[in-house]
Length: 215
Image (tube, rainbow, N blue to C red):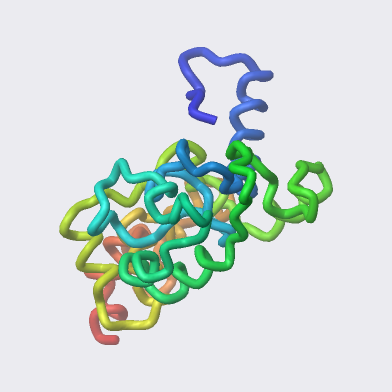
């Protein structure tokens, strides 16, 4: 999952890398003994489409593992700690994860099937549910959310979650602007349809377009 395209790759390797992106849509870790799952780095939350914790590290360090959220004696979630660290939506999802009393090992599962096993049919439907920009921005190896001031300010804003997510996508340039769509072959012209002047990239849409500025 961490392999790169490399220099002068073969057609076969191109296909494998593209397949890795498709796997990144639905692969996540199922919580077992939790000693090898990192809270903020790994994909373990049963929440499509990122499967990762959205808020930046707080209280616990960036290297903290899921096992630190569990009472080992009873194999139950530390409910008070979970609710204190994560916002309500993510806390509820975490607390809904059933923990095994047998301390089974962590394993990779395919989220979009009932038995956790990968199938081409379920992968096809998962891919078709995304647009090209979302598929292209899937990071199968690491989270793009770093423990810095900018992200903390975004996630601490007193606005609906959809507004925070939009801000996050803006910062990652993952919104479907005409400029992004043209680079991916979806459209053939990126000229702004409002002012017919500049390329419709994120900077133009937000800060330069006369029509946007009036709005």
